[in-house]
Image (cartoon, rainbow, N blue to C red; front, side):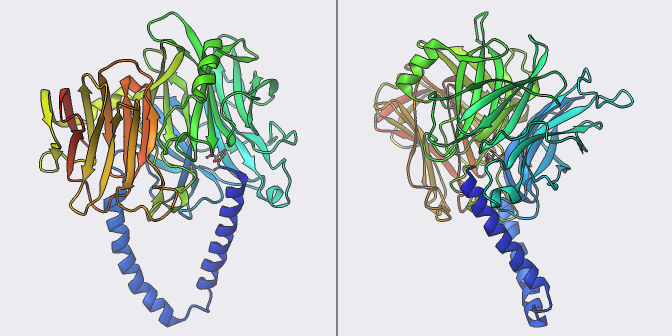
Length: 544
Ligand code: FRU
């Protein structure tokens, strides 16, 4: 988020707090109190309806309050840990804490007590956490394995005073597997060298060099650091000047090696979130592929050439996957990284029409790397653990479609906890449009425009849209990069989100929506009047 947003939110928040505290004083007379009691009952019904309508079936949301970026993800003793930017006292952005949730399968999450509170050094902004198995930090006691969190302290006083050095990097350690953290008494461990937007440290263990490597956003560049003990950090290099997309502030980087599928090769991937400047406006995450010698990240030559043509490589082309990073110490059996993003966009995140909470995370995803015809490409797909939640299924092979055809209705499948897999052969021209609709007239459309070689999502009539004029000001589009004539797609539907994985995860689009009632029908149509679907499989997922 950019600094103006932070200031704006802070001002709004101060106003909100003054307003609330005024009402708690004696100036709120009995009459006002009585009417506020009946209001409470009415409000409760509204909140319950809002819960039913919008609380996701299978995406993580905090029970109450505001959430943005995922933070500090690590795996230990059978549990995946997810922390998140959190303001528990309001549903708009405010003094940042680290909320906490755990899961044994990356799909079902249990919220835990808040892990980090703001303090005299400032708000607790985004960062990461690592399991220090060798006790390099020396924080271990009684043989307990320390978990070290590294985060940005954002000093609001300094910001208000107009100082650009308001962000520093600090650490905290946990000796009870990430539940409680003690802040290091010599914080900050990295002072601000007079750089604005100096934040979001992401630490990973570099196996080859046997050292901790950390990437940090610094203005519109990424700084690389190394450490032996997580306390003393040495600046190694800086990346980004004149490379990639610079239409907004650089935030929330991540940096890790990925094996290139079906080869012996490994490449390094740098993720950089950028706000604004996304492919369909607002917040989005770009990536770079290259090599790392322990000090400097050098972008791959072919990647750079392809970038010159294609401009920016995006992790996700939809409007609602931001600030995503990976679990620090676990990979899939194929060496892929586990990723989760924040399913919103700073353009309207503070205005979306949920009542008790704001925002959800994306489904956890496996990131891989493939070598396409011109260069390397990142692929993302839902983690395989999601397959364990498949229940009722409709499936078909060799369907001939003529005109608008209904594929599923709520009579057979609940369309708000759904996985759809499909394959359409020979998509060489025309538009292929899937529509989710209800009897109130809400419609969410998505599909493929073969003539333009573009995927699209159109949520402009999907239900509530008027909370922000930025929410439905366009149809989101994503270029198709896979060469095949056949189109394969996977769709995940929850109450308020759609996640689209095309061509084995080569092009991904994630978007949120707020229909006025559950969708009742899923249909497909094309302006090629007749076409085939080779394979269709619709699963209702097992969630209550
Ligand atoms: C990204 C971000 C981070 C920052 C955090 C503050 O969404 O702006 O750069 O640390 O949010 O909540």
